[in-house]
Length: 184
Image 1 (tube, rainbow, N blue to C red):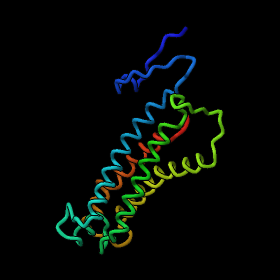
Image 2 (image 1 turned 90 degrees about the vertical axis):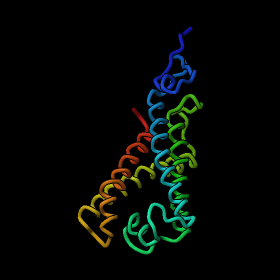
Image 3 (image 1 turned 60 degrees about the vertical axis):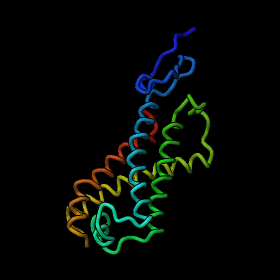
Image 4 (image 1 turned 90 degrees about the horizontal axis):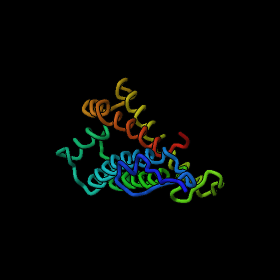
């Protein structure tokens, strides 16, 4: 008989999930799920703001044109379907992150690295890996375009892109990657 051990996440989260040597749990699973919570929270907030904009609000600006200058860099502000589509894609990305962070290497859910993944699992995994890739690409491209002043953009947008939008995209990309990566 083995003595049950508590993982780091069970201590952090205060749960009573216990494991034994007969049923090893990937110790990095806990970090993946916490990274998914971090990335998912940030992305969910961004999705909510896009829904607010899609509903016609100009928050935090005073007009559609000033909102376009602030968050897009060029006028006019994107259409309601386009803004709603962005919110939908971000929300889908959050779901993919949580699914993969819990699934990757988890023996708590009965997963095994010895069982080959189905084509559907591989497709979902690829889609989940696109989340940190897209965030990283947006972060790097935003920094380059705004820092080098490539293309037309309002000065207020470039300032916010360099200070908030691009660094936040890069931070979310790192958290999302940790959530979906395999291995140690």
